[in-house]
Image (spheres, rainbow, N blue to C red):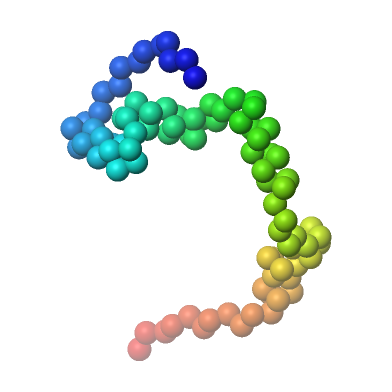
Length: 93
């Protein structure tokens, strides 16, 4: 990747110290850390990277049920929700 544009970013001393330490732990520069964060947050990813990600996801062999079965497993039926006993309000004596 060609780096030809420069931007100055001002951080608080605390944020700069934390980010610099994080970059050091990851073995990278503060600039690279910020570029990675921008790409993750704002989707600054090139087409080749996106295509590779889709291919990698397509190659996974995961047990996936039909949409109907998944909905049934993840969302309780309305009747089950409605038939639950409601807690009685507490009365003060």
